[in-house]
Structure formats: structure tokens, C-alpha cells
Image 1 (tube, rainbow, N blue to C red):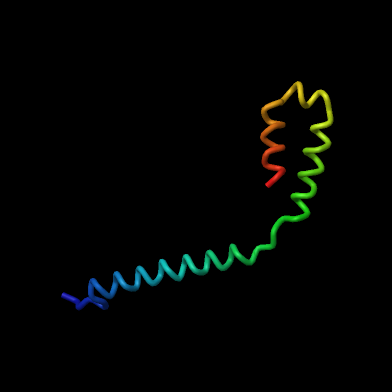
Image 2 (image 1 turned 30 degrees about the vertical axis):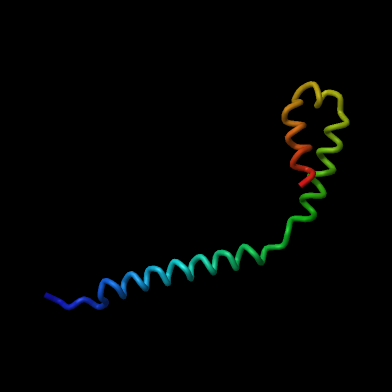
Length: 73
């Protein structure tokens, strides 16, 4: 029978360490992304333009309210 490379406790330690490192790298990558300022400006303009159209209010009132709610955030 071949000896194990690591004991059970050591393997658990390496698995936990790998999980922590993966989480740290993922969070670091997410925090470096710039906010979508230009896309939000386009979205606000589009929602305002659609809100002023009378057909949009009649055709999709719920969707229009939802988009206006999220436009504020």
C-alpha cells in the first residue's frame, strides 16, 4: 500500500486555503470593474423618453413603473 501524500487534516487545510484564495481573487476582480456610468445615463434617457410617449403608458404601465423605480438607483 502506497503512503498518502498528506494526512486528512492537511488535505482539509489545503482545501480551505484554496477556497479562501479563490474567494479573495474573485472579490478583487469584481471590485476593480469601473461602474457603468455611460450605460446608466443612456438608460435614464431612454426611460424618460419612453415615459413621455402616451402609447407606452397605455401598452405597458407595469413595466414602465418598474423601469422608473430602477432608474432612480
